[in-house]
Image (tube, rainbow, N blue to C red):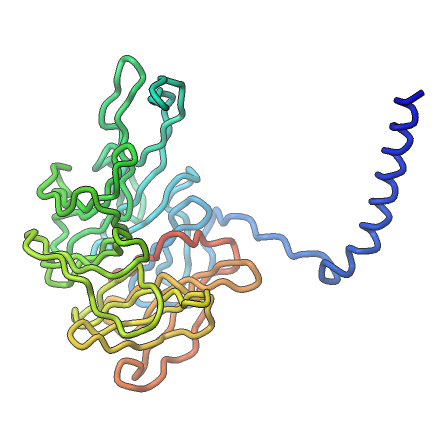
Length: 344
């Protein structure tokens, strides 16, 4: 009898919640139905014309915008952080892989799924792929493999070197430079640090990077010869991350995270620390300069969807205002974690 009573009460509660929910829904949700996210493009999509080519990540695949259209370069759903050589002929990106293995947890070896990334090189027009850096460092017979998470690959202006941040088994993301042709490491520029988002200076002598080593992110300028690592002075109030050089090497565009929340695309003059705001909506981030330095490409969120935008700078760097932003993609769901890459 007790089970029957409890069962009746449960049914009454379900019915009551259903009625209440149907009445409350119009107060909580907007009228009508939410627009579904468009399907991931599998063929070329028309887009506004831009100079050169822009690579970006869309729901786990690398896309290229060029000649008034964008199209997918990968189709695995596991590719991230694209980068283009300055001449646009080489595309680098990281591809996420997994392997069944084991890990020592509190002195006990337990089964684990290990995640790592390979750095892949490809002609952006198509063709075969080459693994430049393999994230499976050691395949151990006992299952305790050594894996590396390579992130933010960046091709040097000379097209011969690769900068990347590497985290081996959670030991910290360190900055490394490799020979792009052979995959051999040339120099380790940090050890035990927490770095991200490397970007080369036009002369190939400095790498601007985001440092999290002191907690809040800030911009760090690292000499490629290992001689110096100097924080970039920024006058704007907030946190600074994901830098990218202008074509003349005089400015860094970066994302400013405001103290009260929200992100905008800014630029800082390297010598003076003068700060310029390119956006002010609080929903824009990950800006990169165009190859000629007259525009920026960046990500912007609107109504829960992230798209790729471009903006002509006009006289913004000398006290004027940039022109209105132009949306390049069609709401298919750009991945917001990594910045786009823009080449000739």
